[in-house]
Image 1 (spheres, rainbow, N blue to C red):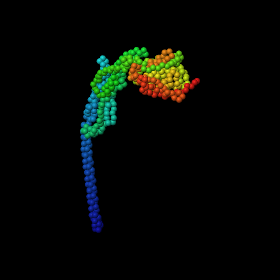
Image 2 (cartoon, rainbow, N blue to C red; image 1 turned 120 degrees about the vertical axis):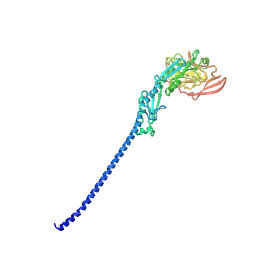
Image 3 (cartoon, helix red, strand yellow; image 1 turned 60 degrees about the vertical axis):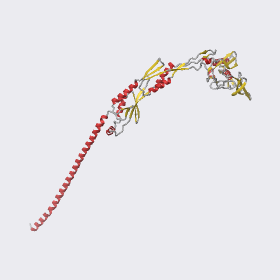
Image 4 (cartoon, rainbow, N blue to C red; image 1 turned 180 degrees about the vertical axis):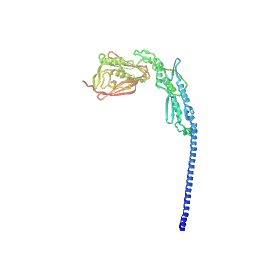
Length: 471
């Protein structure tokens, strides 16, 4: 080798050594950084694991603590649960069910005793009275009824309230940090009012005795009155319904008495009915169908008694066929003509009675004229009857009773009003009419006299008749 080559070669080797060393140092630093990063990551991982483990342990510990507090309450009721005034907090299903059954048994074992007077006693169980006894559970969402026999279901419901909440919420309830649902159990007693009504109706049938008024017959013989008795069944029913719908636990026992009911018409009143205070008679032919109708109608009104304030409908009375008899067909008005109608002629009875009442000083409440003038009384003083259309209705406006006597004798119809001797207060009454124009319009009046002195005139009616058509 030449010296020059050796020198060049040596220079070349000297230049390569620093580059390799630098590279080596760079590699070493990278490795160090990587090691540090790995170490940091490992440390962070370890720290995370440690912290996670600690958190998990704490949560588990917290969960365990809450469960230890909540679990003992799973089978008992939370607060705000009431049975009447009794607080059910901490009570289990067995206790609640037993209490409910005790209450039902106590109410079902009650009895009702009704005493009427000194001799009669009636005792009933709740079953006899068909009473409904149940519990009602009232909550914020409404109320639910639990009939007898469902005490177990109600007890389970009370214990289960709020138990569907997360354990933390239940834990907070126990520690007073959360409000519970409120539930209030109340007893509800429901009477069977129909059953009560049926019972007291039976009492009424047994103990009520209707009074019987004194009666007077057509021959003026008198049957004495008889007082009655009545039991206040409305009071009994009210007391029973009040008791059976209340929360009363004691047995029901009451004494009731019948009360006397006086007859309104006494024999002493009727004995004074001995004077004719008004009468009227009219003529008829007794031997034809019309005459027979008049006789039957008179018999149906004869002997009717009217106490003060009582009324009589002649239409109802004369058509009362409870005697088993019936009217025949005879002449009557229809469309201004005389035609054959059932009961033809009975208007003569109502007309004769109308005038008799006027002579007694009694003006009827309801009266209608005939379509055409009749022959047996003066115009303005007739009283027509037509089913559903015309009636004669008379009210006794006197202060004493009166009796109607109606009968026929040969060819005459008599109607007399009997009452007390002084029933008219010394007045006498006269009938007067005034005809206008063609004689078809008639004004009628009742003149009132004291002795021979006219003291009052009472206008009765203005009647307009139609002319009778022939054929």
